[in-house]
Length: 82
Ligand SMILES: [Zn+2]
Image (cartoon, rainbow, N blue to C red; front, top):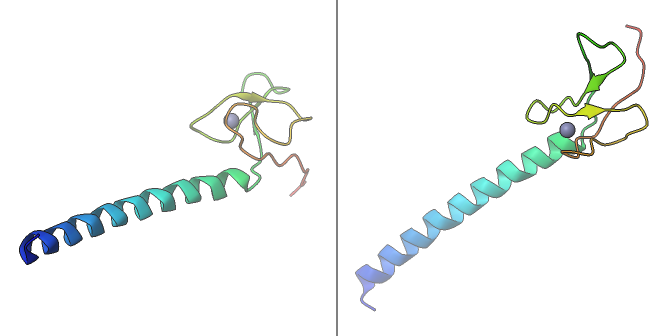
């Protein structure tokens, strides 16, 4: 392998590594968001129905659930009267 081809390969591999790291970072950020409990959203029409706070999901969640069964979003059912 001549040195130019080798240099090109190194640059190419570096670009791939950067892409992979970037993708992993995004996945990790998504995971961190998911394991951070969020308050379920009270349905505007049916007050006893709660929607998953993950806006990509919007599944219905119930007060006995610690996690959304659809997307795995952690749920925070604690009451704060503030
Ligand atoms: Zn969900």
